[in-house]
Length: 256
Image 1 (cartoon, rainbow, N blue to C red):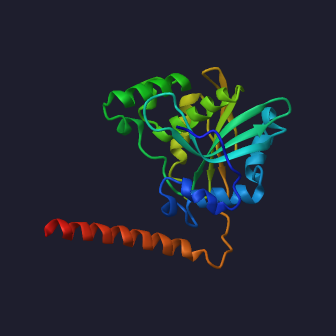
Image 2 (image 1 turned 180 degrees about the vertical axis):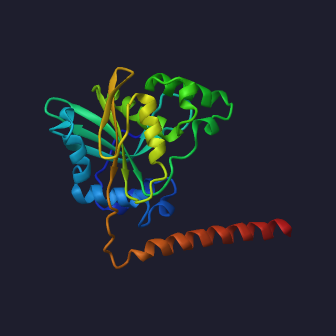
Image 3 (image 1 turned 135 degrees about the vertical axis):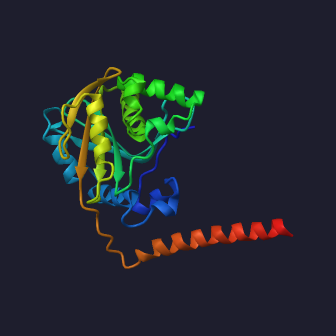
């Protein structure tokens, strides 16, 4: 069940327990760490995000109403929900828009749809539903990254749940290396973009009655000034060592 009641984030570290791999994903240089720190510090739209939105006539008055870190979103089909890094409720002059923010710090977008689609009926039904929502054929989707499909669709579904027809997916990139940029461009062009460039909002693309926008934003990763920042790496090392010891112990017990 997806929770509908929420508590405010007090410190950036409060998000750790909600991460997919918790401490392993929480270290300087990783996207979860960078995205959480920059958005919490701003307590609103970061300058780079605000600039790309306010440069577009539809979002000239954009401001952050609410943001939900590690938000799980029901995709309306069997399987796991989509867990977006940050779901942003953007206030405009007379309405709201829903944006899924995907943080990246050199990480790729995961599997191609053609590889993810393993022949199971469950995955086929999910892909059919995502393609219908995004206005893509299955053949168009096969060479694209699955994460881009479900992350964008999740913003559309949440927009409809919030009773608005404006949605978007923004990649908030914190690395000089951009292994996923060409994948993002391919996805934007599949939805109908004539060209795709960083720092520009593309769209709207009509998807299931919702106007959808896409954007790629580059930002330097925030510097962790804490003198105890290194402890995150030590905790990660200790956790891995503990797992390894448990496996060795289990192997020894099995050999007795």
